[in-house]
Amino acid sequence: MVSFTDFFLTSLLAAAGLGSALPPQISTTKDQNGRLTLKQVRNPRPHKAFNPARATYRTFLKYGVPAPDYIKKAITHIDDEQEEAFSRSKRDTGSAAAIPINEVDIAYVTPVTVGTPPQTLMLDLDTGSSDLWVFSSLTPSSQVRGQDIYTPANSSTSKLLNGHTWSIRYGDGSGSRGTVYLDTLAVGGLEVKSQAVQTAQEVSSSFTQEQSLDGLMGLGFSTLNTVRPSSQLTFFDNARPSLDEEVFTADLKYHATGSYDFGFVDRAKYTGNISYTAVTESPGYWTHSLSGYAVGSGAFQTTRLSGISDTGTTLLYLPTAVVTAYYRQVQGAQNSQYYGGYVFPCSSSLPTFTFGIEEARFTIPASYINYTRISPTSTTCYGGLQSSSGLGINIFGDVALKAAFVVFSGTNPPRIGFAHK
Ligand SMILES: C[C@@H](SC(=N)N)c1ccc(Cl)cc1
Ligand SMILES: C[C@@H](SC(=N)N)c1ccc(Cl)cc1
Image (cartoon, rainbow, N blue to C red):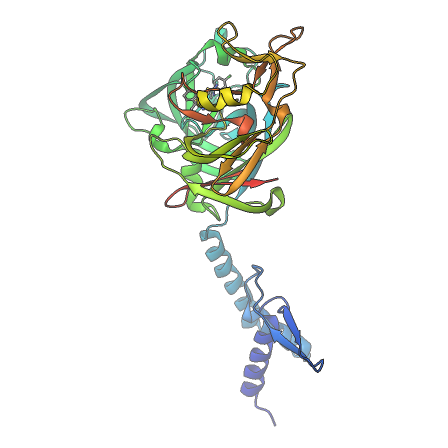
């Protein structure tokens, strides 16, 4: 007669073996005589945790024995503890659209919800700055032209950050300033409970005129944040502790909607391998180097070019020597004081431009560099590649970034990765 204890233990072990994971993957090998060997391998896919009480309960059912009450309770005790452990673990991610705000991709905006109930704003996710600021109920109505605004008074979770102000000036001369609230903020399903939301009390004319842009979300390093007396963290820095991976990715597209992902690298969005290169955080930008460049089908020039990968800047700005080498290949191109940059007859054909990330090569199609007509009726076109000599910094802006899938990795040390797509 098999004692109950033996029965119970045997079935528990049997169940443990069966219930532990999804059926293990089998790898097979065949020797020269055709003999097959089955080798068990651990199941590499993450799977739901095993609940031994549930396995025991099933064993009782299998042998037609009514399961005692304490087994049923044990199932819940174990499920609850596993859920609690899972919720403490890093597993948050987010994914949201990057939508061009006009027909030449001058900037991209992403839907962001702020406050309770959620107020949706379209923000320019900008790796070249670190302030999250929005058009708000505090922005003079004379400076608001069609933008959506954040009204802290309508949010039950908003809290004024007393005595704190901010003021920012961007490289193109635009700027804004104001006060600060803390509130719940989410991007693509990824929520931060207490994000510093900088409410504009003044914005410059270029922002007023950009009616489809309700503000910026800085994704540079938090050292650049302008809130005083105490600087605030970016959304990415606030979200980090709960992210599966300490990364966000940019998949910007030419004349089409792309995406920003947080906390994971989506294998479906790129081909081949990701080529990583070192990032220095100084002075707060994603600063790294290119390993060189090529104009059209010309030879690759190996030369380290340091600059910043900046989703908030429209064009690609490189040293004059590189830019003149490029436009030398363009019929009728000139560096126009009048138009403030390299222009060419819209009928001219343009070469591609290739940049290197370590050993990898990324080619920007000519269409991306044929950026825009000076005016709808003009036959003069403005280049997407311009000289950085007046800026003091090379900027790998959207014209370059949209030619790749880009991984901004907040690991220690930080790094940036580029892949083909
Ligand atoms: C970092 C960008 S501005 C931005 N992406 N928020 C920049 C810096 C300096 C110059 Cl000169 C021009 C552009
Ligand atoms: C990120 C800053 S500076 C820049 N990269 N042009 C910016 C973005 C959009 C507008 Cl409309 C004005 C300024």
